Image (cartoon, rainbow, N blue to C red):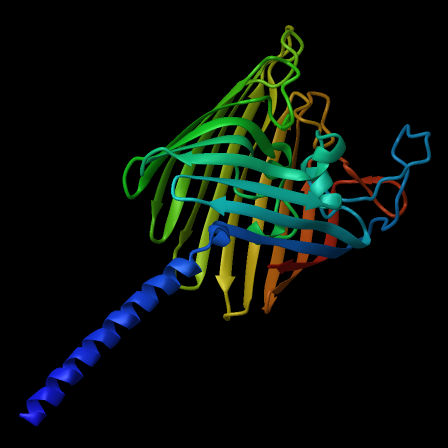
Length: 377
């Protein structure tokens, strides 16, 4: 009889203990779910060293420049264009991700950041992205504000690119947009996007009362993705600038466990408001990358870029306003914790004399070395 009584008492104690543990666990979980748990902070800082072979590594006066300012000899692409040791940017990204709504405040400071938001003035020079979003349903998402472009293979942040220097197609395509876009998840693989936006890179306001339209069709699988992008609209004062049309293909695939291949192709044309032919550019770039070890990878960017009817002023052109460049960039990427070192050799070869050599004479080629250092947090 005594044994039965002890057993019943033991069972009651065990049940009470389990209930107490369960209540304590639930209370702890509820206590741990703070309102600020959905906030995130991340970003990066970067800098680099650059050296030209057979070309000046000091600032030189541009033709017709009488104000004493000097420019460094470099490929006519964005960022990493100063010889010697130079700064990139500090980037801090604040975000909130709720069940239905959220926001991103992407702030930049430094030369790379200033170049990325070059049309901004005043305090807004630190704003790279600033937008809010609403997950209307599981398949529909609305975003309003300033967001980086959906076109192209490369991005503004050096953490998102394999190569430290940037391509011609990226440099003369759009950087950012301000407007409203809607993303649609059609199924597990296919997606679509439509957008209405200010003229490209006018991120603070719209001074022209004109708008551009964007669209995207995407396909994503376990081993890669492909996106076909479009934009169309008047990028400036009506009557002075004709409509711009751009189509862009961005794709990348894991062809083997250690080998990846990315491809970017683009075509842009802007109509002339007079009797002249439309101007613009086109190009294609391949991005093969090989992962040698867990910490070291090597990749090549081979890009062909051409402009017609004076294009966008990226290159020296012939009498017909045509010019082209082939640029090969070999980059290594070595990780030391959160720090990534990127040694890079680049050769730009143009159809016309575009770069000055050490004798001050025009030449069609420029070779350079860049060592980029990126810390990501």
